[in-house]
Image 1 (cartoon, one colour):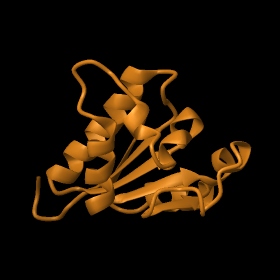
Image 2 (cartoon, helix red, strand yellow; image 1 turned 90 degrees about the horizontal axis):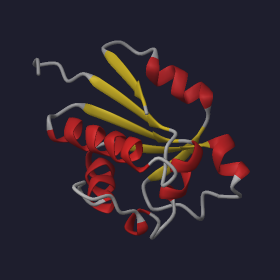
Image 3 (tube, one colour; image 1 turned 120 degrees about the horizontal axis):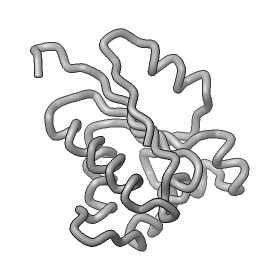
Length: 123
């Protein structure tokens, strides 16, 4: 990577309903954190459930890194955001989510995605 850390936004719409796509999103986000990128992981759709305590631990996919480890790595050095509308549809409140996870909407996503030196990926 160059001297200037690029920003990577990873938006995952997949959860346990599409485990390979979900694991890819978390793996790419955690790998980018390890590479020194500024990472913002967005949990939308069925991935929204991973904002809740214990949900990542219940996820299993052979030959994939444990989701709790990937999530912890992203939270330690990046940001994790739960979609406002997705949270509301699932009756998830700020009091329900893991420490460090914020709830924000499309305006924040667009602001992040349109900032300089930013790449956005959607899974």
